[in-house]
Amino acid sequence: MQCALERPTGAHGSSVGNAKCTLADIAGFNYAAANFAADILVTESHSPHSILIVDDEPDSLETLRLLLTDEGFDVRVAANGTEALQRVAERAPDLLIVDIMMPLMTGLDLCRHLRAQVETRDIPCIAYSGYPMRQQRGDHPYDRVILKPADFPELLNAVRELLAGRPG
Image (cartoon, rainbow, N blue to C red; front, side, top):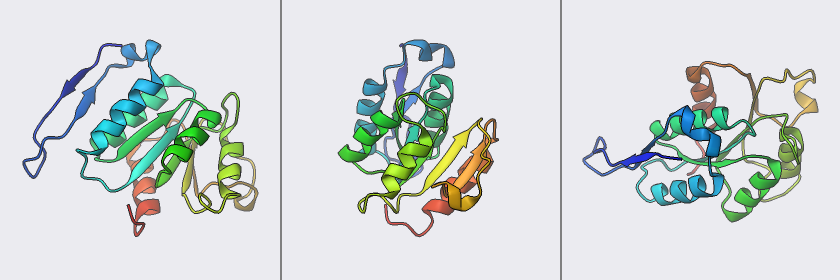
């Protein structure tokens, strides 16, 4: 994958890392490298909040990662629920955005597992999926359900609402 790393100047004169990738680059997307790069960029980010995006669709994953990174969030990615559990064990995020239908472990199973653990039960979780939820609120572990394709402002508003008042 060929991506250029630019270092534009931030609003307060600081250097901010910003990866520019096209969706055509995603076919060979390397999740481990992306997480390594995201961890490096954390030191230069001004956002106290971290988001873990979990989706098995590379286009959706990369699009959300770029959009939320551009908004100043510390963003990490995982391709499935099992990989997400590893990312959470390494460093718990402030918020999860998960697809529902994924291989190895569904988004539903992932969020239920995290809700059952004392250390992770309070992490807000947004289901962002093309799979419509048929259950009532009490039947699933999500704080918000947003159907794909949603406009980015709707998702961003949900992210900001769920992170409001939470320490970073």
